[in-house]
Image (cartoon, rainbow, N blue to C red; front, side, top):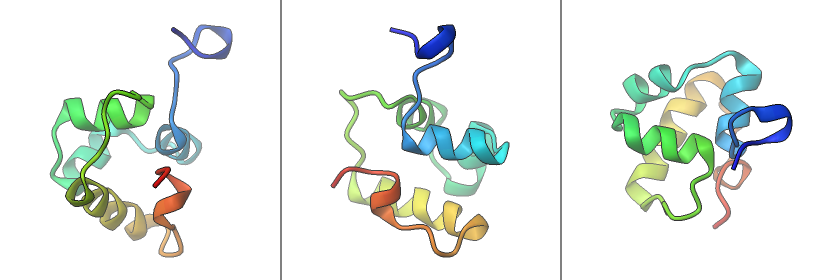
Length: 77
């Protein structure tokens, strides 16, 4: 249930946020997505598959920080 050493499980997106000190709150505001959606994506909830529209919103926000970011850096498509 929990990641290594009792921490939260994290997806590639969650790890990217953590590495840069970015919060899920930041991503919510920049992407316009809801708290539950961002939380599930950052945790790597395997039951929650993002829509193309959701991925587009996430990538638009991420590219403000990293213009070279690619969708497949975060999502297994």
